[in-house]
Length: 139
Image 1: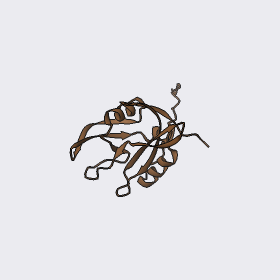
Image 2 (image 1 turned 90 degrees about the vertical axis):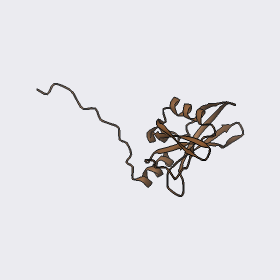
Image 3 (image 1 turned 60 degrees about the horizontal axis):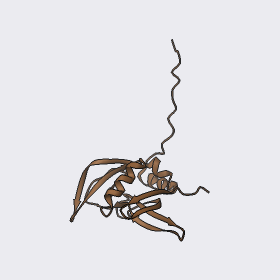
Image 4 (image 1 turned 135 degrees about the vertical axis):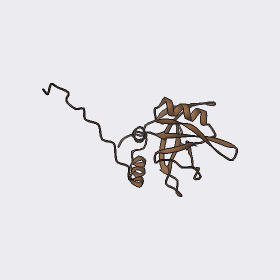
């Protein structure tokens, strides 16, 4: 059995060792990403990376980032190359939320089962490794 991938998450109160857990929001099957912290006492929920804003359109694999610690989350996403931060924010209530197009292949390293279930729900194919064509002399 593969051990889940754990990485450091730096935020204003220090550093946590976290893993990611993928799921879907029940009302629209959009991507949910939860963060699990790992300490000597065991694993426990740390934060929701994503927030469900059903009033806005997103493509499969895109999600809005939770506003609570969004600067730290966006830095974490960029540092770990988990996806592309999209060039807009949306407003809900008093908060503004950034959107991210997540790289499901990168997320697969954290939660292969969660990514497989998400892909199945949205009929998204698994990415196959691209074979390089032989560019030898063909004349």
